[in-house]
Length: 252
Image 1 (cartoon, helix red, strand yellow):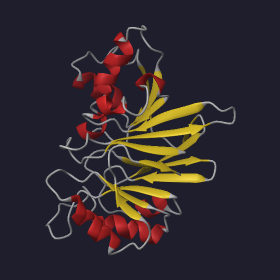
Image 2 (cartoon, rainbow, N blue to C red):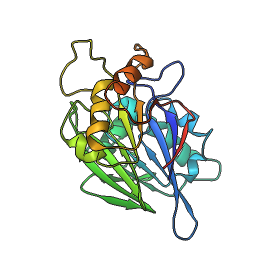
Image 3 (spheres, rainbow, N blue to C red):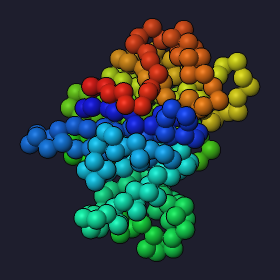
Image 4 (cartoon, one colour):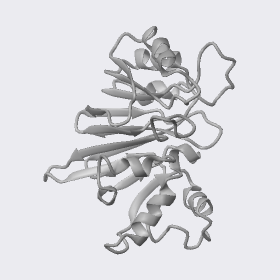
Protein backbone atom coordinates (compact mmCIF):
# COMPACT_ATOMS: atom_id res chain seq x y z
CA UNK A 1 0.00 0.00 0.00
CA UNK A 2 1.01 3.60 -0.48
CA UNK A 3 0.70 6.27 2.23
CA UNK A 4 0.65 9.94 1.24
CA UNK A 5 0.78 12.62 3.93
CA UNK A 6 -1.93 15.16 3.05
CA UNK A 7 -2.01 17.04 6.37
CA UNK A 8 -0.03 16.53 9.56
CA UNK A 9 -0.31 19.68 11.69
CA UNK A 10 -1.46 19.09 15.25
CA UNK A 11 -4.57 20.69 16.79
CA UNK A 12 -5.11 23.17 13.93
CA UNK A 13 -3.72 23.83 10.45
CA UNK A 14 -0.21 25.25 10.52
CA UNK A 15 1.70 27.53 8.17
CA UNK A 16 3.19 24.55 6.33
CA UNK A 17 0.50 21.87 6.61
CA UNK A 18 -3.23 21.27 6.98
CA UNK A 19 -4.51 19.31 9.95
CA UNK A 20 -4.56 15.52 10.02
CA UNK A 21 -5.30 13.64 6.80
CA UNK A 22 -3.54 10.61 5.32
CA UNK A 23 -4.29 9.01 1.96
CA UNK A 24 -3.89 5.25 1.62
CA UNK A 25 -3.95 3.55 -1.79
CA UNK A 26 -3.74 -0.14 -2.70
CA UNK A 27 -4.73 -2.36 -5.61
CA UNK A 28 -7.05 -5.32 -5.29
CA UNK A 29 -6.53 -8.67 -7.04
CA UNK A 30 -8.22 -7.36 -10.16
CA UNK A 31 -5.94 -4.33 -10.43
CA UNK A 32 -8.47 -1.72 -9.25
CA UNK A 33 -6.91 1.00 -7.08
CA UNK A 34 -8.75 1.64 -3.81
CA UNK A 35 -8.32 4.87 -1.85
CA UNK A 36 -9.23 5.61 1.76
CA UNK A 37 -8.60 8.62 3.96
CA UNK A 38 -7.42 8.34 7.54
CA UNK A 39 -9.06 11.47 9.01
CA UNK A 40 -10.06 14.63 7.15
CA UNK A 41 -9.09 17.54 9.38
CA UNK A 42 -9.56 21.22 8.75
CA UNK A 43 -7.67 22.50 5.73
CA UNK A 44 -7.01 19.03 4.31
CA UNK A 45 -9.63 18.75 1.58
CA UNK A 46 -8.06 21.43 -0.58
CA UNK A 47 -4.62 19.85 -0.27
CA UNK A 48 -6.04 16.43 -1.14
CA UNK A 49 -6.61 17.64 -4.71
CA UNK A 50 -2.81 17.62 -5.19
CA UNK A 51 -2.59 13.88 -4.60
CA UNK A 52 -5.87 12.31 -5.74
CA UNK A 53 -9.26 13.12 -7.23
CA UNK A 54 -11.49 13.57 -4.15
CA UNK A 55 -14.28 11.84 -6.04
CA UNK A 56 -12.09 8.73 -6.35
CA UNK A 57 -11.97 8.16 -2.58
CA UNK A 58 -13.75 4.98 -1.50
CA UNK A 59 -14.12 5.58 2.25
CA UNK A 60 -13.23 7.93 5.09
CA UNK A 61 -11.93 6.48 8.36
CA UNK A 62 -12.23 8.92 11.28
CA UNK A 63 -10.16 8.31 14.38
CA UNK A 64 -12.26 10.73 16.47
CA UNK A 65 -14.41 13.82 16.21
CA UNK A 66 -12.17 16.73 17.11
CA UNK A 67 -12.16 19.39 14.39
CA UNK A 68 -8.55 18.82 13.35
CA UNK A 69 -9.46 15.25 12.39
CA UNK A 70 -12.95 15.49 10.91
CA UNK A 71 -14.10 19.02 10.08
CA UNK A 72 -13.33 18.99 6.35
CA UNK A 73 -15.99 16.34 5.95
CA UNK A 74 -18.26 19.42 5.75
CA UNK A 75 -16.52 20.62 2.60
CA UNK A 76 -16.47 17.08 1.27
CA UNK A 77 -20.24 16.94 1.75
CA UNK A 78 -20.60 20.05 -0.43
CA UNK A 79 -18.25 18.63 -3.08
CA UNK A 80 -20.14 15.35 -3.32
CA UNK A 81 -23.61 16.93 -3.18
CA UNK A 82 -23.13 19.82 -5.61
CA UNK A 83 -20.40 18.64 -7.99
CA UNK A 84 -21.06 19.65 -11.64
CA UNK A 85 -21.17 15.96 -12.57
CA UNK A 86 -24.15 15.62 -10.26
CA UNK A 87 -24.64 14.17 -6.79
CA UNK A 88 -22.10 11.47 -6.14
CA UNK A 89 -22.81 7.96 -4.80
CA UNK A 90 -22.74 7.55 -1.03
CA UNK A 91 -19.45 6.36 0.40
CA UNK A 92 -18.90 4.85 3.85
CA UNK A 93 -17.61 6.97 6.70
CA UNK A 94 -16.50 5.01 9.75
CA UNK A 95 -16.20 6.79 13.07
CA UNK A 96 -17.49 6.98 16.64
CA UNK A 97 -21.19 6.51 17.32
CA UNK A 98 -22.08 10.21 17.15
CA UNK A 99 -20.33 10.98 13.84
CA UNK A 100 -23.44 11.59 11.71
CA UNK A 101 -25.03 14.03 14.17
CA UNK A 102 -21.71 15.75 14.91
CA UNK A 103 -21.10 16.49 11.23
CA UNK A 104 -24.68 17.69 10.67
CA UNK A 105 -24.31 20.16 13.53
CA UNK A 106 -20.93 21.31 12.22
CA UNK A 107 -22.59 22.37 8.94
CA UNK A 108 -25.76 23.62 10.65
CA UNK A 109 -27.93 20.92 9.07
CA UNK A 110 -30.91 19.18 10.64
CA UNK A 111 -29.73 15.79 11.82
CA UNK A 112 -32.39 14.22 9.59
CA UNK A 113 -31.30 13.89 6.84
CA UNK A 114 -28.04 15.61 7.77
CA UNK A 115 -25.35 14.22 5.47
CA UNK A 116 -26.87 10.76 5.20
CA UNK A 117 -27.63 11.16 1.49
CA UNK A 118 -23.93 11.74 0.79
CA UNK A 119 -22.30 9.44 3.35
CA UNK A 120 -23.07 6.00 4.73
CA UNK A 121 -22.15 6.54 8.37
CA UNK A 122 -20.92 3.43 10.16
CA UNK A 123 -19.77 2.95 13.76
CA UNK A 124 -16.43 1.40 14.70
CA UNK A 125 -17.22 -2.05 16.11
CA UNK A 126 -14.44 -4.45 15.21
CA UNK A 127 -12.43 -4.95 12.01
CA UNK A 128 -13.84 -3.82 8.65
CA UNK A 129 -12.83 -4.48 5.06
CA UNK A 130 -12.67 -1.78 2.39
CA UNK A 131 -11.52 -3.31 -0.88
CA UNK A 132 -8.07 -4.78 -0.13
CA UNK A 133 -7.78 -2.93 3.21
CA UNK A 134 -8.55 -4.57 6.54
CA UNK A 135 -8.92 -1.90 9.23
CA UNK A 136 -8.93 -2.73 12.92
CA UNK A 137 -9.96 0.02 15.37
CA UNK A 138 -8.33 0.10 18.80
CA UNK A 139 -9.77 2.35 21.55
CA UNK A 140 -7.15 4.77 22.88
CA UNK A 141 -6.84 7.36 25.66
CA UNK A 142 -8.35 10.73 24.72
CA UNK A 143 -11.07 12.98 26.22
CA UNK A 144 -13.60 11.85 23.58
CA UNK A 145 -14.17 8.39 22.07
CA UNK A 146 -11.06 7.87 19.94
CA UNK A 147 -9.43 5.03 18.05
CA UNK A 148 -6.06 4.07 16.77
CA UNK A 149 -6.32 2.31 13.42
CA UNK A 150 -4.33 -0.70 12.23
CA UNK A 151 -4.54 -1.09 8.46
CA UNK A 152 -3.36 -4.23 6.67
CA UNK A 153 -3.09 -5.11 2.98
CA UNK A 154 -1.65 -8.50 2.24
CA UNK A 155 1.50 -8.72 4.36
CA UNK A 156 1.88 -4.93 4.83
CA UNK A 157 0.71 -3.17 7.99
CA UNK A 158 0.34 0.49 8.94
CA UNK A 159 -0.47 1.51 12.52
CA UNK A 160 -1.93 4.98 13.16
CA UNK A 161 -2.26 6.21 16.73
CA UNK A 162 -4.77 8.97 16.06
CA UNK A 163 -4.76 11.23 19.13
CA UNK A 164 -4.03 9.53 22.43
CA UNK A 165 -2.23 9.70 25.70
CA UNK A 166 0.07 6.85 26.72
CA UNK A 167 -1.79 3.55 26.96
CA UNK A 168 -0.83 -0.13 26.76
CA UNK A 169 -3.26 -0.44 23.84
CA UNK A 170 -0.71 1.28 21.59
CA UNK A 171 1.76 -1.59 21.89
CA UNK A 172 -0.82 -4.02 20.52
CA UNK A 173 -1.90 -1.52 17.86
CA UNK A 174 1.67 -1.15 16.60
CA UNK A 175 2.98 -4.71 17.12
CA UNK A 176 5.34 -5.60 14.21
CA UNK A 177 3.85 -2.87 11.99
CA UNK A 178 5.89 -1.93 8.94
CA UNK A 179 5.18 1.75 9.63
CA UNK A 180 3.91 3.45 12.79
CA UNK A 181 2.32 6.85 12.17
CA UNK A 182 2.38 8.28 15.68
CA UNK A 183 1.34 11.61 17.08
CA UNK A 184 3.90 13.63 19.06
CA UNK A 185 2.01 16.67 20.28
CA UNK A 186 3.67 17.09 23.67
CA UNK A 187 7.22 17.70 24.90
CA UNK A 188 8.65 15.71 27.79
CA UNK A 189 10.00 18.88 29.44
CA UNK A 190 6.47 20.26 29.95
CA UNK A 191 3.88 19.47 32.61
CA UNK A 192 1.40 17.75 30.30
CA UNK A 193 -2.20 16.82 31.13
CA UNK A 194 -2.92 13.07 31.24
CA UNK A 195 -4.80 11.02 28.65
CA UNK A 196 -4.51 13.58 25.89
CA UNK A 197 -1.38 13.29 23.70
CA UNK A 198 2.01 11.61 23.31
CA UNK A 199 5.50 13.06 23.46
CA UNK A 200 8.16 12.15 20.95
CA UNK A 201 9.69 9.94 23.64
CA UNK A 202 6.35 8.18 24.17
CA UNK A 203 6.05 7.46 20.45
CA UNK A 204 9.64 6.24 20.32
CA UNK A 205 8.91 3.94 23.23
CA UNK A 206 5.91 2.41 21.47
CA UNK A 207 7.97 1.91 18.31
CA UNK A 208 10.73 0.19 20.27
CA UNK A 209 8.47 -2.10 22.31
CA UNK A 210 6.34 -3.00 19.29
CA UNK A 211 9.36 -3.62 17.04
CA UNK A 212 8.03 -1.53 14.17
CA UNK A 213 9.89 -1.14 10.91
CA UNK A 214 9.67 2.66 10.63
CA UNK A 215 8.40 5.49 12.83
CA UNK A 216 6.85 8.62 11.30
CA UNK A 217 5.99 11.37 13.78
CA UNK A 218 2.93 13.52 13.08
CA UNK A 219 0.45 15.91 14.70
CA UNK A 220 3.10 18.28 16.08
CA UNK A 221 1.27 21.58 16.82
CA UNK A 222 2.59 24.77 15.22
CA UNK A 223 3.66 26.17 18.59
CA UNK A 224 6.35 23.47 18.97
CA UNK A 225 9.54 22.83 17.03
CA UNK A 226 9.07 19.44 15.32
CA UNK A 227 12.80 18.78 15.60
CA UNK A 228 12.36 18.52 19.38
CA UNK A 229 9.83 15.72 18.92
CA UNK A 230 12.20 13.98 16.52
CA UNK A 231 15.13 14.27 18.94
CA UNK A 232 13.05 12.76 21.74
CA UNK A 233 11.97 9.83 19.58
CA UNK A 234 15.39 8.91 18.20
CA UNK A 235 16.84 8.94 21.72
CA UNK A 236 14.53 6.00 22.48
CA UNK A 237 14.02 4.18 19.16
CA UNK A 238 17.00 3.39 16.95
CA UNK A 239 15.05 2.36 13.85
CA UNK A 240 14.26 4.63 10.89
CA UNK A 241 12.48 7.71 12.24
CA UNK A 242 11.35 10.92 10.58
CA UNK A 243 8.84 13.74 10.72
CA UNK A 244 5.70 13.62 8.60
CA UNK A 245 5.69 16.26 5.89
CA UNK A 246 2.91 17.14 3.44
CA UNK A 247 3.36 15.32 0.16
CA UNK A 248 5.68 12.66 1.57
CA UNK A 249 4.94 9.21 0.14
CA UNK A 250 5.74 5.85 1.76
CA UNK A 251 5.51 2.49 0.03
CA UNK A 252 4.55 -0.06 2.68
